[in-house]
Image 1 (cartoon, one colour):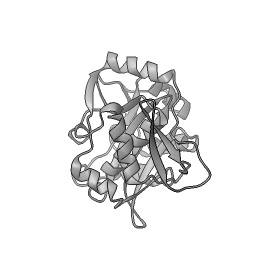
Image 2 (cartoon, rainbow, N blue to C red; image 1 turned 90 degrees about the horizontal axis):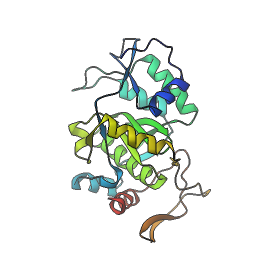
Image 3 (cartoon, rainbow, N blue to C red; image 1 turned 180 degrees about the vertical axis):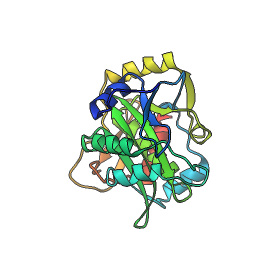
Length: 247
């Protein structure tokens, strides 16, 4: 459906809370359309699957992954055409809106670096105990996949209940993405809106260093000194342990 009301950051968050999200028809088209698909793609956090080869890449820490250090670079990377993705739906207004939400701590990015070069990443919206994945890109093999797995681990650690992928794609199906009805999605969304998750999890300790996993009462808790503020990097083994213990 086509929205005629001027889109503001406040309206955008209200729309997400009701199961609606925006897209532009084309990168150079200023119009924004509101969507609420009959079938919604989600990725159950308790069923995340990491392919074996990708797990090796993550464990070896070939890439360095940061959070919220280069949001506008990430969204512009997602908007840039690439082979197999000659047209994108992220226009100038969407870039401006989500950049403002990032400044308000409602939109987040994960950046993937090879040495000092940005090679991929993703961004999305955090609201309640739900994370709405918007887009990802990769300029080196596996970069966006690494970003996704790091995101999933962070959401698990932060107590999120819903990871919205909007549409089911072959790329996301390899991680366990499924398609559910709009009614089912809205039930899950309403439940997640009554709770509050923490994207910066664990709580900042004031220092960075080693972290460990300790099973407590059948659950996994993070212990040790881990700097979870903006720019924090989690080692690959910790990311994989979080996902393994949850799935």
